[in-house]
Image (cartoon, rainbow, N blue to C red; front, top):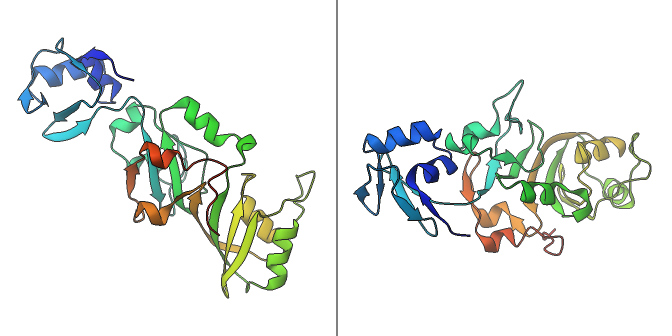
Length: 244
């Protein structure tokens, strides 16, 4: 949705600081639109497709931000991390000003696909367990993967704080110590706890897909991020199941 806003409001909405600071940036000649320096913070622009530059770096106006990050190990999915750096340190600083937040959480030692956004409705919808969005993980196990282990995970294992057994949507062996598992419940530490309940131990875990959105298709190395286009957001639906 487009609107016509003054330049200081545009910069503030995009996370470049307070209105006062944004006005100072404009007065200092640090902001240009269509290659022309704009010194008047009251100058207004249509936000649809607006491209502007700050400190000679180009930015496109976005009403909301939708991001995919290939999360490395030893980063916390929290705005107030306690023991490790937060994932927001991997993103441009102004995203914190925009209140960008992780959509759900990955443990600090879990790697892979993580969504982030400043759209509260999107975050709530994607985090809701009622949506049953399938998520694909590759788990490395301490003990060898066996057909019996796969059968247990598919048949359901009982976790001590769950009223009924939890089962994988799909599960298959990749090699002697790795399996690929699809879950849709989104319970706390679910893959690790299910493996423990089945008599094994998860030594490494990577989320490789959410719905039909895959890390392979995004082509992100660990620590890299990208904006998501609408076609990619459309893949984040229960119907768009990952290929197991």
